[in-house]
Length: 183
Image 1: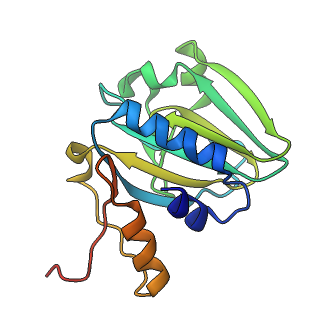
Image 2: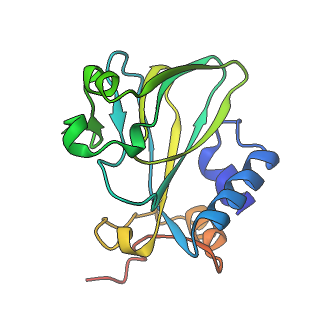
Image 3: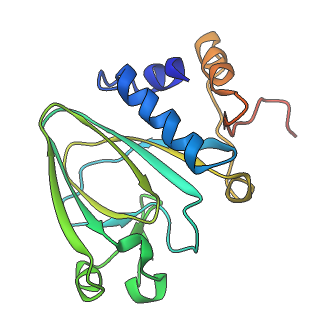
């Protein structure tokens, strides 16, 4: 697991301490999960997003790796507010955009964070956030019930990618990927 997070993130911010925290959090949160999505979220000031719109359980966790001097705003309690109250809409970036006014009406407190030396965030995918400066590398880990509705990742056909996918396969954490043999 150390190898996969270091190699994929390669932002220079994935430390051994962070990797242990990520693995520990995933293991304590899920019986089993797999990485089913990874992306770099572009800076988009003034727009607030969720990676998951609603849902009763925290069955998707998001790991964000931020570079030095990045800035973000997270909305406390937003993961507990129903999607009907937040009125989020599907955005062009495949996330859910949430109106700031709806978050304020729901009592979700904005918390501004500056990652002076880079940073790690592990959060429920329903937490609303704004990327004010910087663009985090983001990994989403989900339960098998969630993953069945997701497209499989398609890693490049390289030896390094094969090693990375193999390194992620363990008893408790895996990767949700197409191995090239599916029809």
